[in-house]
Length: 363
Image (cartoon, rainbow, N blue to C red):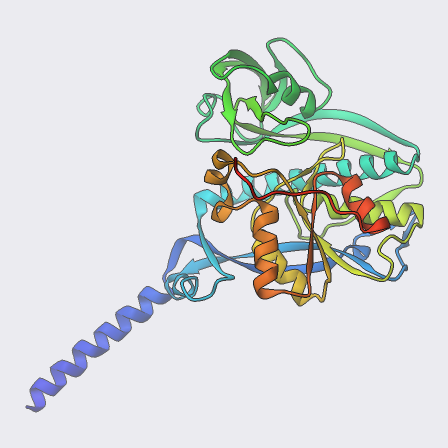
């Protein structure tokens, strides 16, 4: 009997030990959780001066931590946690390349924010074009074996453009399957690649009401911006493009002295292109929770009109605005989610309370 008990204890001990090892063993992925909602007045100075006006504009983020068995199980019981594979997060790139891409995204977001804010404020600004970098190549792209992250695109079908928007517009209305030739440089050497266009899901916007065609490559501009007065932005460890809208609001309000925040605690997210259009991002439900924790009462969310095709590819099959609105309704009822398609939409809301029309219809 004692021998049998010893065997049982040994087996149980082995199983417990195996469970602990399995729980702490790192998985090939990440746990995404609500991050911070940082006050942008900490990062932006104009002529060396920080914003001292009442009210805050906050940039929201998502935390990434290495996944293990225990943390993965937490995602099944905590609605604010989710698991993402390493490939989904990094696009299959090395950590060094991923970090470089995130820095490119942030620097491009800041440059676009300065351009939009200064143009809106009718203040002097000049830009110097440096190049267009490839940030990612989708799995559905016909160029996935020939174009790589870090390449510099120089022309499409022999056409040269001064920014990535020029390339986008050139491809936007082409039919699916149209053959195009991309010229690029890599490590100082020139090359060309030929492939066909694809239809890009989730690209219906006021700028492109029928959606866009493209080649499945994400580009960003490397632009040097000179302004009067001088703007300095230090984003610290924050990377990626999703802070574009909030950086634009912070710079514009601080530049003009309009004090549009008016004492309010304002969070939000969304990319910003040089023409003032706001783009969708990932993890917006977690950013809602970060805004709630920071005491925000207003949250700007990118808005695009939903379609059945679009919702197939959207996170939780909801657009950014839909997911942000539903998350706030359930978990942050004091946080008002404001849909925006452009920078002007955000400014108009802050000035007059005007909100653009939205729909959940997919017809």
